[in-house]
Length: 152
Picture (cartoon, rainbow, N blue to C red):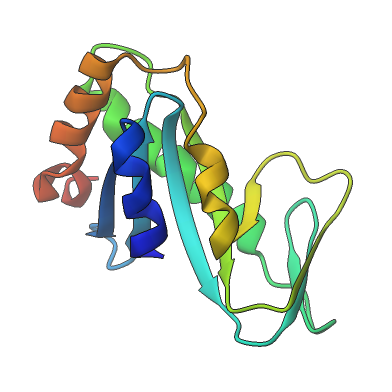
């Protein structure tokens, strides 16, 4: 996943990995660039078939898991934290990336969270129009300071 995200640096994106939160959890990855901030939650389900709906996901047809709802909540947390330290609106979108799966089926109504397989993350690269290069650097400088995530 880190390698896939690292490829976006050539087109103006910054990446942070494994950001510890004050509650003991962590943010898997933050992708910061011209298209905004993407809070990326990775899920490793080797060889599985995945279905994603509005708030839940099913792995191999099993019990519903709240992946989409949790990703939305995490993006809201990131938006609040960054908003306290930036003098401008910081657009943050939730993303779930499934790693090692064999198939991914997205419900037609699922629009609140971007859902990808690891090889599809490059689709975020061309996105623009949300942050200027100066804003990207400011958000990145704020986000990489551990203390902003721990004081919640």
